[in-house]
Image 1 (tube, rainbow, N blue to C red):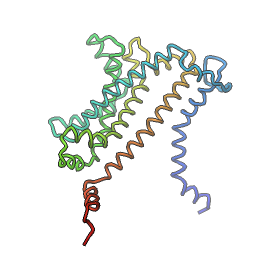
Image 2 (image 1 turned 90 degrees about the vertical axis):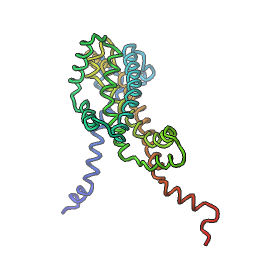
Image 3 (image 1 turned 180 degrees about the vertical axis):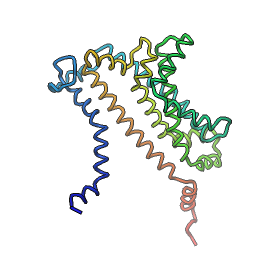
Image 4 (image 1 turned 30 degrees about the vertical axis):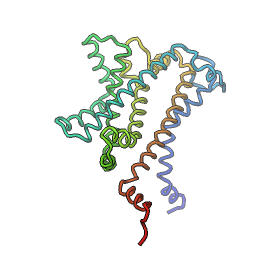
Length: 287
């Protein structure tokens, strides 16, 4: 075996991982770089020169700004509702036995597996059948509907590995059900809930197909970009996308920090705490 082939075999996983990460991040890097571009025409597809002009006035295009505000409002509200409903549903599916539990576990996956064009068309048909005016309300209903499944899957995976002994220890020490949930269950589930909320927010603000069917005359950020792609995408689109990416990175770092903090809390088992208490008690360790 030649040294080159031996080195390649040893570094194969590292090389593969590096290429996979580069494949995912290069398009984002292009977006960031072209947010500093100074295009000569309407299309921001070729590099013409560096400028900070568009960063100095990122919200000067009224239509684009309105679309971004609408997407942020829609994503925030749908994330709040879908996270609350999905978390409660996940707890019910994991911790309680009830009629239809197995069917519910199966049905919760269907929106994730169904093509978005089918969901969008089905929701549009339902709204038209019941005479519901298309607009923000229909967008909100649609986004909550397809986000709940992702929230349930993420929170449920966190609940499956949850140590119920911590809750039982809190109850043994005199805490009621609400206090146990607030001081023990919720902090340990917080990383999973935060991850589910971030996923729901990303899905909502990024959705185009379902929103296109049910938006009516309202324009979300993806719908605006689709329309602008036919007449020229302004550089401000790249600027706003870069800002959103930066906010997402900060939120991800915070979520990872919360997850590690929860893991440290979960590692403190009641037996360990009892041993520590006995070791620190007066008179212990004397024979």
